[in-house]
Image (cartoon, rainbow, N blue to C red; front, side, top):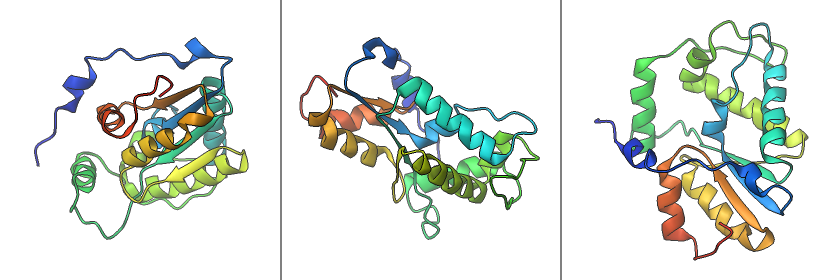
Length: 187
C-alpha cells in the first residue's frame, strides 16, 4: 500500500496556541494518538509516573475542560481498513516484543519501540485511560479510528462552551469539521 501525502496539505496551515483565549469557557478535545507522542518518558520512570506526566501535560496545556479520545484497536480487522493497513505498514518498520506491565513496572526499551508494538500500545492506553479517568479527565475510545468521534463530540458540545479546540496533527480533522460541523465561530 502506498503511503498517502496528506502531510503536504497539513503543512499549509499554521498551528494555533490555545492559551490565546485563556480565561474563557473553553473545551479541548485531544487526539489520544497525538498525545501519546507528546510526552517523552525518562529512564527509570515507571508506567505510573509516565501516566502522571500525561495528566500534568493535559492540565498544564489545556486546563480542566479537556477530553482525550483514543483510537480503538479491534483484533478482528486484519488490514481491511485504511487505518489497520497503515498500522500493519508501521509495524513492519519498527516493533518490539510484547511486554506485560503494571504501574510499578519500568520500561526497559525505548518509548518508540514500546509503542510500535500494537499490543503494548493497547495495554498502555488502557492503563492511561484508567489513570486519567481517576483524575476526572473525560476519556473516550473509538471502535477504530478516533477522528470522526472527536469531531462528533466537538459538534455535540459546541453550545455549552465559548470555544472548542481540537488538538492533533491530522488534516482529517479539518476535512471532517468542514463536512460535519455547522458554521459556528466557536468550533
